[in-house]
Each structure stands twice: as structure tokens, then as C-alpha cells.
Length: 393
Image 1 (cartoon, rainbow, N blue to C red):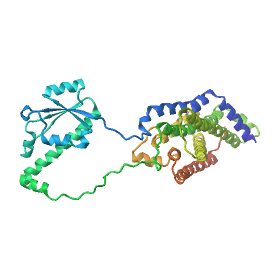
Image 2: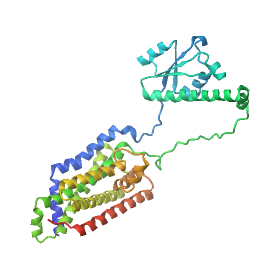
Image 3: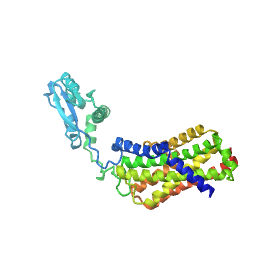
């Protein structure tokens, strides 16, 4: 009975706190809005990427009649390259440089005289490549023409080493059978062809992070009672320290669950975030995160001597777990992924994202099981620490 009374007063105290309402209820919704809109191009893009065309200015020697060499024509006339390169001819190097400066072309290629003849003789040939302003378009053009030059150099080496007759015989030999199947198959990472948006991703991330931050309220309240000497008065009443401790943890847990409901419902109504067709499993995830938050807060409270120290330690732990689990930005680094598998954030995030993608329930339950196992381990560590240290003035 005393535990629930303490929990009720703790709940009323936090519910009327302006800082709690702003930091724990309004701030996560604001961050979901900002991150979901700012990084919307990184997530949930079902459209195939279309490479913009690169306008390439070619400079051909007047001795060649102003026509592209046959090898270059074969390159630029292939169907794959035609969709990427737009040809423009220039009379001189100075003319094409002026077009580059004015933005009339994106890239320029200066072709030396008698390019094909010198290539057939095994002589040293090269293209002069002039990049433009756009770095991405330069990269595309560099890839095409530098690969072409590398192939030309390979053929020159064959002419020098084997001789022209042997090279011709090798080229006219029976071709090697190749499979008509593509080497690369485009697939979808989600099981049912769905993808999550940036708003969904950061809604899950911010929900987890701020639910963990709720434990900081419990830690500050517990240590605040000790630092303000009010714990002496509480201990003088017929109330055990464990009752005070449990009451404050329960009160913070209740406000944390209300916070979870506010973030989930607010993101649904304000931003259209779809949390998936498993509301009961989502509630279970929120409950497990709340328990994890409170157990972390319990452990930090027992090992810290001041509220400021506990606050700094808990912030460091939460930020580190959020970072390695990809809460700020998805991390492809395998090292961080291995570390993330030991954090609350990772399995909570995986559970929520799989719900959003409407994955198989068995996969969601597997993630929930890992989250429950980590929560149980944290609870056991907190209980052992409480028995050894205790909560007293």
C-alpha cells in the first residue's frame, strides 16, 4: 500500500513538471518530424535510381575529318552508354573548356589524332579527360572512359607481346559459352516487398531512446531524496527504504508507459507513421524497454554518489547504445553491428522495424526473446547490486 502511495505521488509530481512534458513528450515528436523530413530520401525509396545524362564534349583532331574514331563510336553507340552520355562536338580544346566553364557540357574528352591507327600499331595512345563542375557526373564519365582506356591498354599489350596475327586469331576463335541469366539479381530486403520510411525509422529510434531516458528521471528522483536529506525523514516514518525505492521506480515506469503511448499515437496522427499490424507485440516491446530503462537507472543510482554523476553516466550509456545500434543513422560497419547485438536498442529496433514491414511473427518473437533476455540480465544485475549496496541515506 505504501509503495503505491509513493508511486502515485511520484506520478503526480512528474506529470505536473513542465520540463518532463517538454523533454519527454514534445521533444521526441519534434525530432521525429525533423529527422523524418530531412532524411526522407535515404529511406523507403521504392523507385529505381535513374542516372542523369552526362553531356560530354568531344574534341577531335581536324586531320580525322571531325569524326569520332571507330573505337570511340563503338563505345558511345552501345545502348547502355547511349542512355547515359549525350555527345557534343567541339572544334578545339579552348572551345570545350569554355563550355565547361559556362556549364554547357558536364565533361570533356580530347581525342588525339589517328587514335585508332596508333592503337592498332601498339603505339602509346591516351585520351585527355577534362572534368566539369558536378562531382557525381564526373565520376560516371571517369568510370566509362577510364575503363575504355584500360581496355585499350590491354589490347596494346597483346599486340606487343603476341603480335597482331596471333591476337586476331584469338579474337576470331570460338567464343566461350556464357549464360544468358544476369549476374546480378535485384531483390528486396523486406520479406513482403515493403520498406519503411524515414519517419518510421526515426519514430522507432526516438521512441526507444526517450523511453530509456525516462529512467534518468527515476535516478534523479532517488538521488535527489538522498542529497536533499529528505530520505532521513522518509526513513523515520514506518516505511522501509525498499518501499521508497520501489514506489519511485513504479511511478516513473507508469509515466514512461504514458510517454510511449503519446509518442506512438502522436506519430500516427501527426505524421502518418505506420507501426504495423501487431499492437500487442508493440506494447510488449515498450514494456520491456521500460523495464530495461528502470533497471539501468537502478544500477546507476546504486553505484553513483551524486545526481549529476548518475545523469552523465546514464546519458553516455544511452547515447552509446543508440549510436552502435544505428539509432542516429544506419551503420553498415560489421564491428558496430556485433556490439549492437548486446544492446537493448538493437533488439527493440529490430522488433519494431519488423512489425512495420509486417514480417513473419516468428521473426518478431525471436527479436522480442532477445530483448527479454537482455532485460532479464539487466534486472538480475540490478537486484544483485541492490542487495549488496542498498538504498539508504
